[in-house]
Image 1 (cartoon, rainbow, N blue to C red):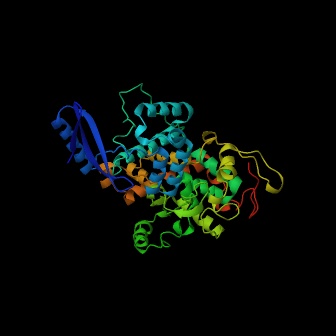
Image 2: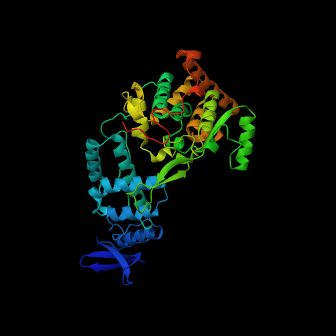
Image 3: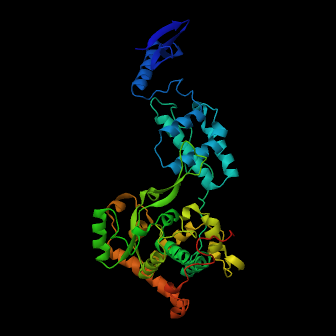
Length: 443
């Protein structure tokens, strides 16, 4: 029950916060300046109601610095180690230098907006967006903390009516032709041999992510899969669906990535087979030409990886972007001597860009062939939101259409490139520009 006491011409109301001092005594809060006892009592009753319903923010609760809250928050979240590392990196680089010694209950909306304006003037839109999302999570969780650390988040809700309209920035895209993808494969053949040729065509005709390509093991691709699947129930269903329908398929079961120790975020981490991004394990049908290439590739080596590096190990542990991808996309001069190879022409549409954009080209190529959106999204490992996502399903007929569209693109490109005069994949040399177990110099 609140306690009322008069001091001079005004009265003060005092209530217990539900907390205790370090010595065990109850911690009270109070407010004075009332001239009416009933008004003071009602204020105290409202505060006690907030305390009982966990809505009250005591003056002591907010006396925690942003840096202290960041460390406490990190200990309580359950996320992938990559996300944990990313959060900690943003905190060290941007949030703590700006707010580290500030009490979280002293951050104002105006101060936050000034900070955002400074960041936008200095950094890219995507980087600022990452900082804003993390800071927003920190403040929202401080509000929902029990007992609350702050009464409301200083991060304002996005309003389309406030301030000048700024058109959202999007990455400028260029039309990628099938011929561009085949040129990448031809370049990879020179850089990396038959493995590189099949690697680029697999990326182009499946839309798999780079980590998924690194983690593709021989038991999860044609002709081994689905008979080699270790899961008996999944193997039974896949055999009935794909072998019964005469379709070749592979299984995206893993991605190969570095998993960092949260206690040592500065270290690179340990190579680990983890679930694909967002847990998007899936089965991908592949056209006949690609199935045959996979069969030939597995017969050419005994590595556990479908796509081993030049020295036979995992691609993850190589400098992939410098040694493999850069000369494939940007081209390279001819080389003589021990690591001799012919001149590699650049692929202009990919010049200076990341390999992930090869995946981006997969969707429009399927759309041009009339493949249903649900089959495209499932193939890329995306989830369709809402009721449509709940009731939609990829049927065998849709998968046959995917195979037909991709095979047709392959055959059309082979015809434009010279038809039967083009060297068949089975006759491609087993290596490109390097001896077995040797890695040519970086570009």
